[in-house]
Image (cartoon, rainbow, N blue to C red):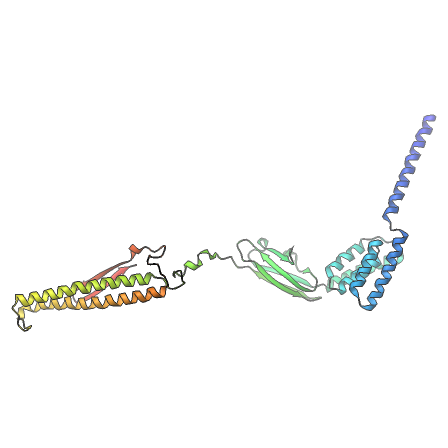
Length: 331
């Protein structure tokens, strides 16, 4: 019997302790009467500031009141001020918190209902931005708005009115950056096509120019080669023409440049050599002059061929035949 009474006293003591602990925790969680009074005072100050058109100061009063005593009425007025300042996304968060409350008083229940209605209005008035990606595949592109990554595949997303910085990046492509201005209640669409990144390391070599950005010196080298061959032809065939003529005059006993008919073939050979010599000198001087001009235009002070150019591959050869003279080459 004594054991039974002892057990009952122990259970009663534990129950009492639990009730006291729960009551203390509830008292700590609930705002004090002083907090409620200060919150109500801040709320009234905020309403007065709204009448004066000072929405920034009014928002601060409503936010302070809600911090002391979270109530749907305070959150509702705070959301309205946030919309007045163009902070639609902040208002959306405030109204979501309002709808999460479970007020007991009729006035606060009515304020919560108004939060739901106003949330729908904010959703309709908030501007939206839709992003469509054409190149490359959308899954390869990272899109950010004001530094925050977004998912374009989810459709147009709500933002605050005003300017927003949109950027897009993908590996192997140039970055995309554009400022988009959004207006209340309007939806804007932005199309993004990224361009492939270019390798600029070898672009300067494509022109084939010298270090000063001029023309390639290769044509100058070729022209000088042609000039050298032409001068060689002129000198060689000139000497041959003179020797042949002197030989004909000596062999046939020509006097006053008058030779017998049988010397005509040999004289024709001498004349041909003379013509080739003249053509060679013309080609030679032309090549030298052209090479000099081309070299000056190249802007290159280095006499060595450019890297990647095989100087031995530049070959110029004379072409001589009955009734013609010329040059052929490869480079």
